[in-house]
Length: 418
Image (cartoon, rainbow, N blue to C red; front, side, top):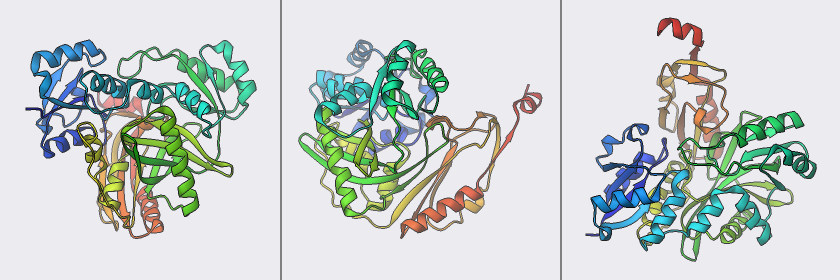
């Protein structure tokens, strides 16, 4: 029976374990391949079969699958991890199952390749230069100028993305990126950095669902980023409060960008900035949105984007007629200084706020925390809903005021827990 949906790894927060349970609810038998089961809280509670192998090697994955199940039993391949979408594309092609071409996903994963493809297609984006050695930085800075954004070509979660305002800062950031030979999942990096024009404009993400030649925009999310000089998303509100003209301009730009890179299957999360000159493409993420955005969409429209994305791994997604009803928002919890997490106060008061939907603390007591440099430094989140944008915004503001992160310095923590 063709009913085994193979997941290769997952993200460690948000939709990762939820996707496994969702696949089972939809009638498939999820099979989870990982090189480290302990990475995932709640994995054993999903009830799905878990196979341990080297997920950074496609031959090892194929050998494991061949020894465990019949090839014909596999109905699709999926992942919720940015780091494994190329693997999924390759396996889907080899097994002749629905998916994107490996070249399209490689183009999306490597931000330099994305920039080149968008440039060829005439899609608006920041000015950019590629740097593969410190010696190339001078020429890149001469072209882009300051301030500029320096980022790895193939990382995720805003990791090692920094706004630089001087040659000293830029050189330090370039050295940091070029010294990273493997990412957090043990995969080789391209050891390539991008120097990009900094665009100071409102930021949004566009949530798309694609099937073959059809592209459909599920909605647009307003994003708030903080923690300068780093870029850490601290708040999302869905749907973004945009006029019709701006909304159509953003949608058109994103459709052109996805066509340019050849993306044709599943959910895409495209980050943009809306400038006076037009919509500029910041990044194309060939995957489901993170940051619990699928949950915001579900609360506001009733559309289960995760379910639709999973369907694209096996068959055509179902038609939907979701209507926007109110607004949803998420506020991320972060530390205001470095230290050891003692506790988070205010949970009981938070639960009494109007429109409260979810309160989740992901950081564990005793863990080291810092001012956020990337998405992995977030400590938890609050999700609320409301009838108006202003209502949601004000409730998130109130939640930020109530939640208190209590720390103890590392020396004191060490004396208590030697």
